[in-house]
Length: 245
Image (cartoon, rainbow, N blue to C red; front, side, top):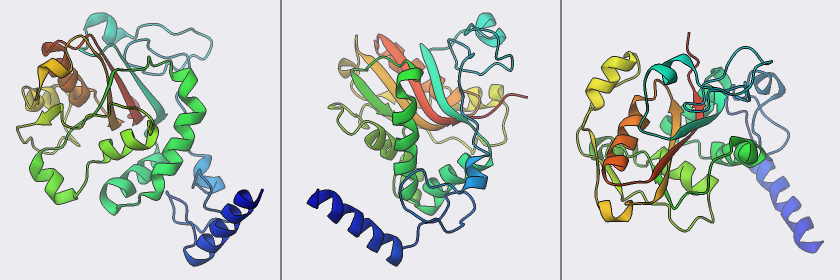
């Protein structure tokens, strides 16, 4: 009781000295308890739920259908086993992710953990042997000062014994991918990643962590390198994914 009361008091002092604000619009909030979205921005969040593609996690518009493979997954194949995301990449979640990546708004991490813990069971991801954040090229890492994928991994899986940012490296720099098509992204990224110590992933299940699934080219190229090194299974988890038109 005393500890709980002290915690509430310290949080109230913190909120008074450092007023919490919405991660999307910046509106002042009454409390720093996650999720840090105002009512208006929270209404713009779009959770991804069944029915979805059992492979890439793409949501289907018809809520009456069950989970099944989407057309692209039927026609082709990924190097990862399955990919899952918490939200569609709408404005509120996009601004929260952008604030983390470029504004060092680390307060977003507690909100991402809040949503992940609430949805973890329905994501149906197997417990992995290794958790690997998607790496940045060393030049980009020096510019940014941190890898947001590593922060996410440590935030979402604080008790996991094997979060390994050292297993996969981005040894070739690539141009910005933001406005490129999936095919161009795949060409740019081919061979951009390599596994540093294949013996550490051989026969292991791996969970790749990243912030956004756009076309899937980045995580698939990471998965290709991991599978080539002998990984038994590669799953993908992102906070959001871009909705296909």
